[in-house]
Length: 282
Length: 313
Image (cartoon, rainbow over all chains, first blue to last red; front, top):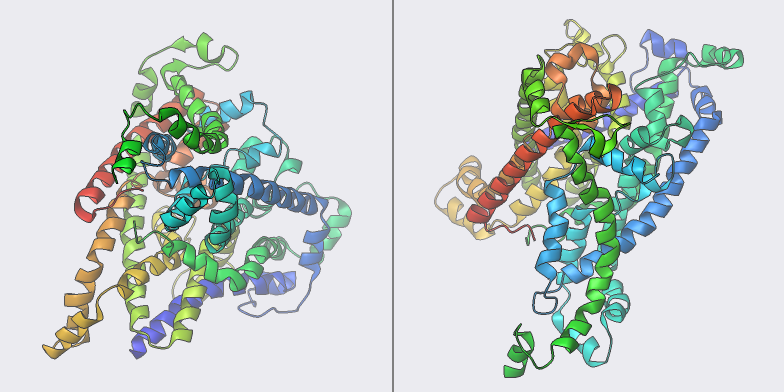
């Protein structure tokens, strides 16, 4: 029993310590970081890495693009999810073509055109370097649709029948009855959609021809994974005495993680319920 | 009762139009999703013809020369194709095995804990890395695993060892990928297994205890058989993923020095297509992977249906 507590605490620490270490590095001076003094606490505390990161116009630009894609993408994706999940949640005797439509959606989970054909299609549609390429291709997430569909199915048929007797059509039923009853699962699916949009980086990299069109994670990738420090002015190089590549990277990493960090503790109930929602029932 | 049957019989001549009208809104609702699916998933499928052509962007799909299976033969003869396939399957299988063992173990341990607050805290903390992107975690790992300045190697040096190039050494790289991927995702799977564990009937434990079983025997004879269905299900579903070794992670953490053990099908397709502009071969490799995946996924769904009564929806 004691072993259980110890092991689990160890596992939890393993999840936290690397992030704490990076946070400490981001708040330390370049000399302390280079000398390896920084473990879990900042050495020679300084905010210059963050100052430098935040004053870079590319950072703000990328942040705004990400905010735009999250907002636009959230609305479009949620509308699509709800409009697709509702018909698919109906039984065959209510919606006869349900099975065929379901196959059309599920098939895309099993087979796809591949990287290059998708890229070509997007190019021919003229979507490169636009916000739409970040928002539209991912607007039909089958996993979330299935989640929502399973939840709609738990709503008793009697309610739907009562609405029909009162003269409501499907649209009215969906808007006035199903949606208000589905708020918890809508919240959970919303979270997954938002987090997914915030974390997306690959689409920005392949579909944007200019780095000024990158969303935040794609921009961060150019700093963290493929740093390009040759393109700096002399005033920037002066700043680099205070900070270093390592502390600067650490600050960027942490800035990229902060939104999730802020949201997660308050909403983790929704994050966790999403997994068990409708899944074990099958 | 008979009215209901008359209404749902397909060939009922009496009120077909009325029924169809009632269903019309449902068809309309599906239109946005279908249009998006058509544009971004089904139309690209036609691009697969590139795999059978010597595709030149200037000539387009219809102008490029048809070469049949030449691209596939070329792909099979590539010197690194064997290692790419091996790396993909090796890393994927290892990820599936370790990626199931660790969460099951953690879930078993969490199940023993009585203190609800501790249980919730642990679950919350270990679930967290799952929500950070591989760009962020890639940056964290590159710093933490650095042979010169990373704290992991600091600890190793403390115990008198030599620093390990976790990300740069080709022998270590696949294992680093497996361990860090499990580290990121085990919290997510733990929650699923924990839910399954709470569904095991309490009475069975009592019965075993009355028969004289200690904790370990109870775990072996009651708990593990109790979660066997969901473990089988997860395992079978993971079968469909056998060729997905984790592009997001590997693409952010690999480098040319580890290509021989770290290059997987997806990273190779990316480099061929988007860096070397070898569109035809890249599409061919991607198609090869898709075909195998669809076979594996179908097999997995069939097995899951047979043995665990699982339907996709």
